[in-house]
Image 1 (spheres, chains in turn yellow, brown):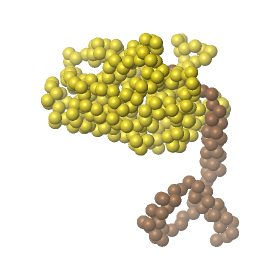
Image 2 (cartoon, chains in turn cyan, blue):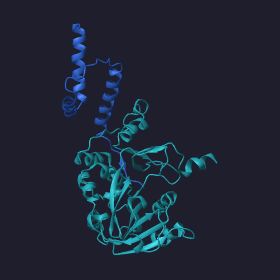
Image 3 (tube, rainbow over the protein chains, first blue to last red):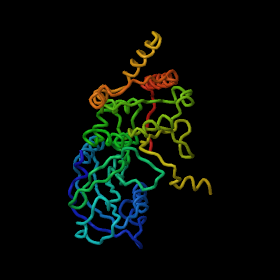
Image 4 (cartoon, each protein chain N blue to C red):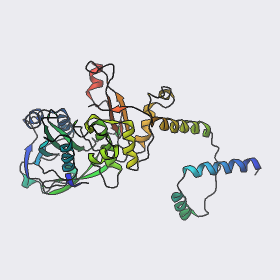
Length: 300
Length: 73
């Protein structure tokens, strides 16, 4: 199940990431400015990024599997690019200077994939997966994080963190990526393909996995993977919000190291009020830091 | 020990048996043998905890009928 992240690159470029390098321009130029890639660069910069390695990699393992699955839904689908970015805390200019690099020098990595399908109106990059080290602040905690192996250049590295994945609205929606993030931590085989998630969810004929998963399908996936869990739908009993508030319920999952999933409906001016769409995200840890711009923006 | 205490102890053993792992018990027995003494602890909040857990189990069962769908980015 690690095959997709342990492939040898077809080529490798080294990009120094110190001034005057601009992450913003780099993402704009290479990845059509996707916000999730910007977030990766922002995290890497806050962790002391000095150098980036850019590798074109072949589609193998669960990525090749994903391409086959998407092609079954959209026959004109093509994977136009697959890039592995390595973010390093050490400064170097050439690939032949990578030999002394160790796990400690690796801040994180991201695999970005370019999906193109005219019939699906899709021509965009997404982060297939990314893992970054937790920043060393005492006020945050990820109980029982996992070490993942990744190849960069010709060498294997190990990085401890949580797996981030992004949806592409073709073969995976928010529920798929939330499930893979959590399951990759617990399954003995170390990961799960989106095709396997869709098989376990039993997508009805005529529907596409990119349209999302129901609560029942999410339960089927967890049951199929042999994961024990407890599920609460607050819309069925409003009283549960008082007796079993979601934050306490989630805390049990987070603190035990198992993790948790939280679903909610979206709101805002662009969201249809009659039937607001629902989103679901995985939880792995907690923080007391005001480490996003939102609290600062709200205070100012 | 009174009959009432015996009954309470038996009840506690039964309820503990539901939550403990037989493998852990075996390992504990290997390590400590008869060196340990049984300590009786009054389960002050057994009722409250039991009611709390039961409600979660009921909610979990009901959530099987949930029609929610998660779609959005």
